[in-house]
Image 1 (spheres, rainbow, N blue to C red):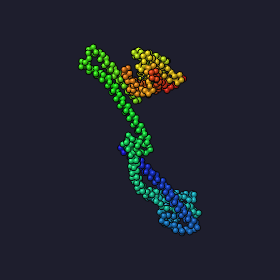
Image 2: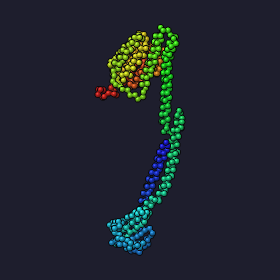
Image 3: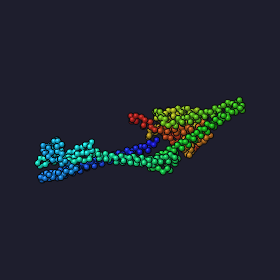
Image 4: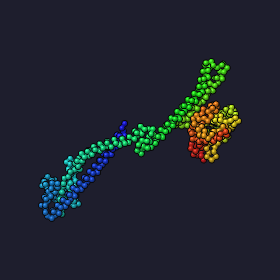
Length: 455
Ligand code: ADP
């Protein structure tokens, strides 16, 4: 909870404090180097003036420079102090070891700086070689960098505190600005796009709208399906219940009982078929269900289906024909059997006496796709109905479908199986002339086989 506020807060504080520290560091370095330069320049000028005074012969002048900040020492080449502005000569040890003196002896001038951490004071030295071999040295005390640091510390703490408070206030305002539209969206989920929001939220709002529409559609489909299923199950069950009641009440003569039982049996069979189809559909609907596709000969499958349909064809006085050549597809045998059986079953049931059903399986000469065609010389389907027959429970002629044992789910199952195989379905039909359903399966070698099988 509140993690976004916390995160914004911490980042702002982090950025603020880091900026402050970096700025302070840069200022400190620049200022201290400027300060040191200034001190050195000061000392060099003083030393130069002393030198020229000395070389003019006014040695007594040295005492004029007895200021509180600068100390002047005159040192002989053997290292003894000849003059000292504070007059404290006896305490001084031999100067020859001092780096600034050494440098002055060797190069004419030398400088040094001794930093004292404990005393908060730095010592600066500048020494110059005079023409007579003596050395004049100017030294000066200055506030150390550490003491400047300490002086700044209070300010840094103060600015840091202001940054922390400022960050908390800013993060509160920012989070509110960020979160408010999201909360308003959550409250108005049904009209997300009407909420006043910032640009970056538009994709989320759009995605939510699409998702909602889809959910609504799915819900509608699901409700319709449930209503349809209940209705479809209710009809045969009402018949079954009616006949059973009549037998129970002794209203059916003994001789009519087999007839009644036959009707009950038929209706129960219809219910079983329907339930079978529903189960099949829900199995095909399962999301992410990876089908175990293998190379199978569609021609062989179609031929077997045709043989199985022979009895039904005779009943409807329809003749069956098989055409084409063995053709491989990537598929699942069980599903392909179901697909051909459903199409063949429809072609027989919606046919006319002495009609014909022709199944063709072949390879397309140009694309090498495998084509399955189921043609009939039946009642045909109007153009308007052609668009809807793949919907669940959609039937052009309810009576005929029921009578011939249809569930209204056959083509919905076909559509699913076609999708699972990455195939395409086309329908050509004219009323009273017949129907041709053509399914094109992608060439099995193109994406699933090794490259050498292509050559
Ligand atoms: P059913 O179980 O009712 O046959 P289908 O889903 O298989 O359900 O088909 C849906 C509807 O499409 C059928 O009710 C029928 O009206 C129409 N239909 C399907 N195939 C054919 C065909 N070969 N000829 C004419 N009409 C057909």
